[in-house]
Structure formats: C-alpha cells, structure tokens
Figure 1 (cartoon, rainbow, N blue to C red):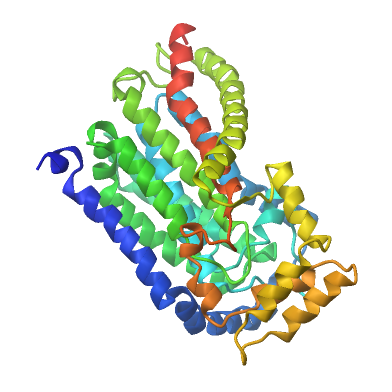
Figure 2: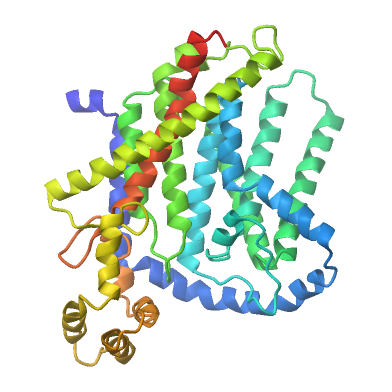
Length: 457
C-alpha cells in the first residue's frame, strides 16, 4: 500500500504497458510485418501520383516558390520551438504548455508512422523538389507518409481555434465559422504547398490530414486531465522522465536511417523540460491569474524586454546543458560498461567510427560475415568488405547492411537501444540531444521567469 501511495497504480500500469509493448513488438517483429502490408501499396500510390504533382508544378513561378516555402517555414518544428517560449512569457502559460505537449505528441506519432511504413517521397527527378532552407533539406531525408507539416497544422491550428473559442465569452456563429474557414484555408495552403514544392505526394497530405484530425480529437478529450496532472499531480517529474525514456526506446526502427528519431528525441526533451518547470513553479509564474500581454501589468515594452532577456538566456542554458551532457553521459556509460558511439557531438567517438571506414576493423567485419548461417549469406555484404580492403569507401556496405530484411535486423529494432551486446553500442548523441533541449525548455518556464521577477519584468 505504501508503494501505491508513492506511485499511483495508473502510472505503474502505463509504464508497464509500454515496456510490455516494446518487448512483444520486438518478439513478434511487428514493425516489419506492418511495413510489409502497407509499404508496397503506399509506394504504388506515390508513384502513380507523380503526374498529378507534375501537373501542379506546371504552374511554376518564383512567387509561388517563395510563398509556399515561406508558409512551410512558418508551420515547421523549428518555428514552433522559437514561438512557444513567447506564449509563456506573454502570460498564456496554459496555452503554451498545451501546444508544446500536443506538438511533441504529433511529432512522435507522425514520425513513428513514417518510419514504420517507410514509404518514399516523390521521385526527384522527374518531380522538382524545392528545399529553400536547411530544415527543408533535412526534412527531405525523412520518409513521406504522413506529411508532418499537414499533420501539425491541423492539430495546432485546430487546437488554437478550440482554445480561443472555449475561453472567449462573446463567441457567436459568425466568429466560429470565420475561425473554421481560416483554419481550413491554412491547412489547404500547407497541403497544396507541400505537393507544389515536391516534398510530398497527395497520399502523404491526405494521410497527414486524417492522422491530424484523429490526434486533435483525442487531445481535446484529454487535455484538461493532462494539464491537471502537470499542475498538481503525484510523482509528476519521475513519471514524465520514465515516460520520456521509454518513448525513446519504443520508437520503431525505419527501413533506412532518417533524421526522424533525432527530431523526436529533441522535442521529447522539450516536453519533459516544460512539464518539469511548470510543475515546480506553477504557483509562482504559471497560475491562471498571471498578467497577460497588453494588460497594465504587462505592457508591450515589458514584453519586448522579456524577449530580449529571455532568448539569449535560454540559448546560453542550451549551450551549457549540451556541454555538460557531452562530458557526463560518456562517463556514466563507461562506468556502467555500456559501449557508446557518436555520429555528431563527440569528436573522439566519431574518429573511432571513422577508423572503421579506413579499414582498421576489417577483421571484425570478416568475422561477422563468416558468422552468417549457411544459406543466408549476403554476397553484397562480402563484396562491400572487399571494397574496403581495396581502399574504397563504404557506402556500399551501409546499403548492403540496410537492405537486410530477413527479419533479424527488424527484430532488434526496439531492443537495440535497451540491450547492449558486445557488437552493439548506444548512440550517446540521443541522450545529449534530449538533455540539451530539456534544459532549454526548463529554462523557458523556470529560470527565465525567475530572472524576470528579479528584473521587475
């Protein structure tokens, strides 16, 4: 009974259910089975939709290129990440935390579906793909179905409309219809723009619309319960930390590597930081009676002062948190005997990986090839190893390894982040990315408001 008083039963059941799902999905190889059912038909629809895309791109004009690229940036994850702090600092804390958590939920489900199905984007060429920003270039490396921009626009603009109408005292039918019209036009422009830019096919946009509507309806049903838990729930920080870590482990493995998991890790960190910070300081900075922008207590001048103080502060916190995580996580992993690797943040570990490409680990690769059971050998993999011995690069090896879909690589998909054998390693970049964005988000709702109070902002 004492344990149940500390940890509510529903939290135990929730986390146990996720752990059970991770293991049963791995054991039954569900990702591979679902992909085998859907991928071929979705790919067929994408290919057959190419003439429709080319027809739309027949109206190509530099004005359209600029317009659709601009609105795609406005509804992108980086934009929302920059915009959400302003909601908190303008006095709209409830809307800010709801939009943040909804964004994290959309990001997780949308990217998980993408990587499960692993359906391609439209072929370019013949489709003309316009990637005006670095963010768009990275988005193009992801799979297609569903369109994240469409999904996020449906959910966030739809919830914003719901929130405004629910908290307005003088709404009427005309206002409601006008709001719905604006949201529909925005969603239509985003969906059409994704097709025009060559980033998605029609089936991707329709998939994003359908998934977005389902998520929006679900979120409207539970958002009050979520908010109540964050404000005054029991065991909030520990439960949120466990849920965040398990969600990282439960993420499905795509057919080929994509940036989707990196985006999920970052925004999961944001959600955890927001939940932690709001729970700790709700009565001080985030209660319902805090002053709103344009009120006598929070003038436009004060809000601009908050922005000029707040933005540099959270960027400094992000930098410091990243530096601390880069030092701390490798030490912890080495202490626990967990083999680690890094593809981005830690130079020493990157050099270790690069040494394999220089041919210094050919013996290990040969042994791995030799260990494959008779009848299941992979000539392409052997040829790739041989090409390394000749001094060639290893893209062929990567492609060969990625192309193995006997079920074994898929079966390791969920558990490879949990069970570290001598041949596997933990990508420490995931933890670094999670912690730096968690620190950034925590500072938005905890440290920065504390600075505001001292500066009388």
